[in-house]
Length: 187
Length: 187
DNA sequence: GATGGTAAAGGACAATTGTCACAAAATTGC
DNA sequence: GCAATTTTGTGACAATTGTCCTTTACCATC
Image (cartoon, rainbow over all chains, first blue to last red; front, side):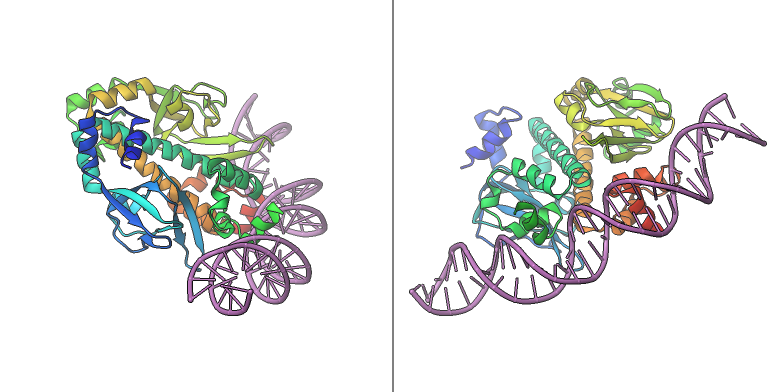
């Protein structure tokens, strides 16, 4: 099971068995049931979660009570409220489970220790964050440059099979349209 | 002039004079005139540019020929085509100067060397990328959750004084609306 | 298999935004 | 300073999207 984390790190940098054992010791395993919250708005965010299995979503609820999906986190994704985690402030996002999920989480303190002690891990997190940044920039471009239909097709590429796992109202919320508009696009 | 780079790095991690001299040796100074391209779509992207002065924009031109502004880069910002830079592939973005601009640029090769040789720099880039990632996530939220007027107000907060330096058509393009729509919002 | 709850589709209408056209204002280059 | 270009604002209309509502379909659970 922790093999998934090792494989994930080794896509970026190879590790010895000893190194991986040491790295793993900084993580904690935790299971969540469907519909349970991992992070709720207002919480202090101690951890970043690596998803072993299941499906979670990160979302924001605006003043009008509307939910906006920031991302879906499937196997091998990281999920948290990054701003609150890195700045050690209160969450403005909610993270909850769309399916039963298993995670390995790491506190910011442990993450920083790890980065200090093993430069490979600092390298890993730097590369990983860069990849995330690039993906965000692409999503921004899709939001300002694509219409709803094009964004929908882009989403299907990025998350194949998601449609079978997630209500369309959440897909719509990820795309920034209402579920009625999404329904008109696909009919 | 290179003091700006030092100050910028030292917001995240303190440096000795020797360290900074060494770091600076990996950067190259370059001036650009207004309207000149720093990166053109299709170019291989060798460098990441730290802006000492002036104003640049990063943008994408879609198949219909419309331009979408990804970001405005003022003093103390970094600008490049991150995907093409980090993956050493061809640019899908254009970067050009809205004003005469001065930059210090670094190649990917030098950046990676620097990160290897001075862990403080790996730390610096990791933190900097994290900040950029968090800012991107917020912009995504503003794009899916805010209407055009709210996004406009959010932009003004983020880039005070930008309105006086940039044509409104580019502001509109950054917000993901037409210039006519923006004009109606502000009148 | 019935039941309650959730999800999805679609119609009617309102609001927002885009498109096109034109004129006024501002800026730039000579 | 003047002409040319660019930028901006506005009106008319079309297209898209949002809102509200009803109906139907699909499940989970007992």
